[in-house]
Image (cartoon, helix red, strand yellow):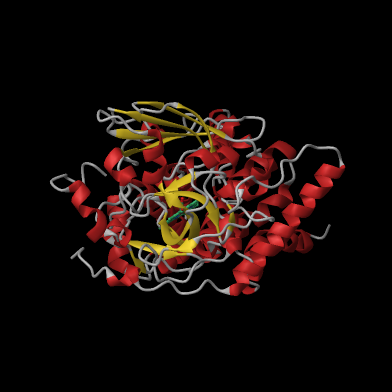
Length: 201
Length: 322
Ligand code: HEM
């Protein structure tokens, strides 16, 4: 498969849920509580795609399939896109854009605070993702981008915290995330000193 | 200020739009057809009802109670019957509509016990006078900050309780929802302590606004809405209205109900609609009047019934007794 084709296939796959949602909104097919459908679906995809982003490097290492690495940044940016949309839907539909009400929500409710913290991290990561920024930040770039893990943990915590009664689904996502973290730690512990830079990137 | 004019909910009942009735008829014909097919397949299906007020196709004859109806236009039959919280059938809002058809509501009996003069096991028509049915348009305000306007059919809960003669020592009523794992797939998930239990203080239950519901949009209550018998006290959050009731117990002690047992800091026994007392995870100041996208409708103290019910809580700290 040509490299570009693979890239665009992944791009289309990540964009599809948003397209489907937009289509459902356009045709009035979002159910009895359309705002809830939009909010929940966007939040789930933000988290799901974020965790998929974290799986890219482990997959490359385990399979030796190097080409997969080229989609990592793009997939990460899609996670940010869904998270941003999720926040904007919340801001507009739940709080009618009232910044003070949103701020009150953030400081009063750990559930909202955890989502906000995750979004702030994702925003910083998105802003520092262009190649020019990678070059400019040098070694610091790696340090900054390790925060993708805390962002994912906060996303899972936010998901679990937001549930009324049943936290089985966030627990599954938490399990997958835990596994990815483990792979990461194992790789770090077992790395040869000379390959440090290559491995951690 | 929480005080508001009572006029807004006492406005005369505006006629239910024909469209939902048309829908409900269609829905009913589908059900009836399914019944015929079932009968053809040799399944025993209890059709019809001895009582005169229950018409041939499960239609109910009721008198509109304008005094106790809100002026808001009712939600469609489809909305009311496809977006439900009834965890015994599953946690998603569309699970009840999908699975509640499995629940066998006929025959049905309700065990009445505790501090009553006439304990025993009653059929639905022994507790509910089907010749005195009322239609009341209530707004159901869910604790999740959405609301729907529903044309219920039923009788005052007080009339049901009077039939079983509460003893002077009785101070609370506990309602228990049916628990049948083979017909209710959601019971496999232990999110709440099953069977579901709800309760009211006796004076709340005897209040004329507390309604024992047996129908909706002029027809017998669909299973996903709590057939054959459910409660709605419109000044309280929706979860206070027990569905598919199989037991009514009168006690002198506040019953241990399902939601406060599961999460005592999130759900209280009283659960009166109160815009000033937030849920830990969201504000209750505004609500989403479904199918509106925006949570823009200000929530009213006691869901607008302050003049009627505020006196029940005189001297109580409603922040502590949430
Ligand atoms: C300022 C940032 C955020 C705010 C204010 C926010 C707010 C919310 C709200 C209000 C809900 C609905 C809860 C409910 O109705 O039960 C929700 C659900 C959710 N959010 Fe967020 N969120 C934020 C950021 C994020 C981020 C960054 C992610 C992912 C990485 C995320 C993932 C989710 C998920 C997975 C759900 C659950 C959806 C479901 O129950 O189906 N959120 N969020």
